[in-house]
Length: 266
Image (cartoon, rainbow, N blue to C red; front, side, top):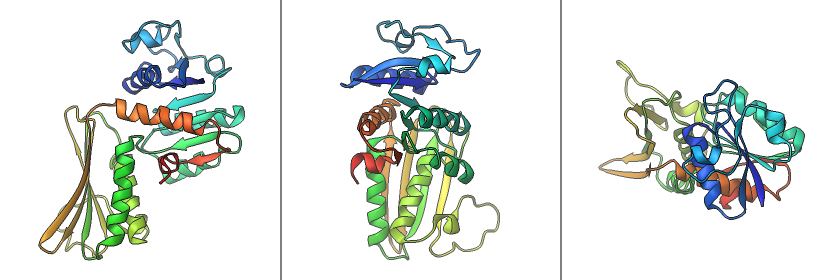
C-alpha cells in the first residue's frame, strides 16, 4: 500500500486527490499539508473532501507529514513544487507534480532534483489529454506543412497562467511532429496589424471565464479543409485519478524525471 501525502489538501484539487486516493486500490492517504495559517489546518482531510473521517488532520508541519510517507501529490505553484522536490530528493520519495505556469529556469531547477527521488511531472495528468498529445504529434507529422496549427484553450476565470500548461504541452507535441523548435515558432498573442500568418508557426489563444475546468483544441487548418482534435475536462477527478495512477506506477522505478507519456508507455 502506497502511503501518500497530499499538498494543498484544503483546496479543490487537494480534495479531489483525497477522493481519488480513497477510490484507487493500492493507495492510502497518509498525511495532508496546507500552508501556515490556512483555515483548514486541524480539520479532518477526508471529511473535508466529503468522505468518512479517518483521523488524518490537515497540518502545516512538513517534516512530520513526510516522515514515513512514500509519495507526494502536488498541484500547487512552481516554487512550492521546487521546495518539495528538494524534500522528495532528500527522502527518496515519489513526487507527482501537476503544477503549471513554469518558467524555463524553474523547469531546469526541477529537472536537477531527481538523484534519489522519482519525479513525475506533467502540465496535465488526464489520461485523455495525454492520448490527445499522441494524436496531435502523429497528425503534425503526417500532414503537409501548409496546414497551419493553432492551439485554443479555455479555463475558469481564476486561472492565473496563460497559455495553460496543457496548451503548451499540445504545442510541444505538434512541434515534435513537425520536428521544429516550439520556442522559435510559437505565436502567443496577436493584436493590431500583425501581417500575414508566418508559415510554420504554431499559434496559441487563451480564453478565460466562468467555471470551465479545461477545454483544449488543436486546429490543423489547410486549404479548404480543417481538422480539429479536442478534449473537454468535465470534472477535476480526471486529473486526480491520473496523478494517483502515476504515483503508483513510479513507486518501483529508478530515480529520475518522468512524464505521463512514460507512465502510459507512449
